[in-house]
Image (cartoon, rainbow, N blue to C red):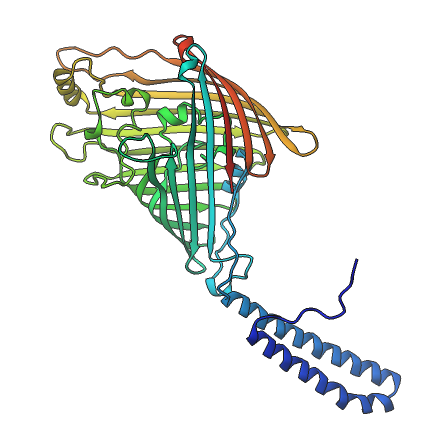
Length: 462
């Protein structure tokens, strides 16, 4: 290997002047020292050489500080992003202690105040019994930006485009997925305000395609816990030394006046059809949430959450409507295995008057359910394809009901509940580059083979 006798001089003009000054001081020291060294004894000579070496090290340290200061002030700072490539990494990140943020003025070039990140997914789905309905889609394209204002304050934001094209005549959407300011209160607690994800379940905060199994997000954490579920408000988050993360906050909630009795959106996801996403959100009634996740044992994540608040937003005909959703989850990672389970249940109180009005106005109306729930178990085995490519087969069983019961309409009339549904999903995924993953699966949904499908997907995160 070629050796360089003299390092390249710094290119910053101010740094070159400082370097020249230091070099002049060094050259000035040697002439003054040489006559003494010639006449001195060996011990004295060694002592003087040691002193000169100490002075040289001090000058080098001062030069390093000058160069670091110039780099921190430089406007030509490279941009880096943050990514996690698997549910394992996501769990480790959730368990990690809160690290203090670095002041902008003290950030070296390798850690700029501004950072970029993102993710995306492309998919292909083919119904088993109706191949003519096969679809290919750029499901999501997300770009995010973070900025550190000082050692304790940062911005986190994400912009998402769904289905490639957004217009009045196209199916796509453009939306802000997150936009909040976070302030570190101390080494173990943070406060955030703005639009942020609700810490519910295993997927909502870890919804990037590299962090879950299957081409599409699982049904329970889409139909029962809406994905990606975000609210505007204020939240607190903290970690303990024993591995417990806690969350609590006050946010906007749901709006029952958005319920559409003429469509099937409420059947697909009761909460997904009435969420507000901080788009001129009604805020006459706010909601509260609490969550806890324990990761104090290696490979284990055990948690639960609850969200509760008014759903009428004090509008006529909706008085007394209240919504609550709770869930519990566990993930265990023994060796190459990953085993997960989740149960979620929602309840909407005070829907009798609204459903009576909807039934009178709309023929075959889609009514608001009183109860809905879902659960799943999932197993994955992380193998290796060749020497370095993680190859993961997985299987999942889900049972769910988006309308498990309805409130009385009066005079003893109660709409019939929908039947439970079961979904079996099996597939494999291959991470052929860091942050890039290929997926394929097959979904067998109860209620007839017409709902069964074969999926292919390509996802990335950086």
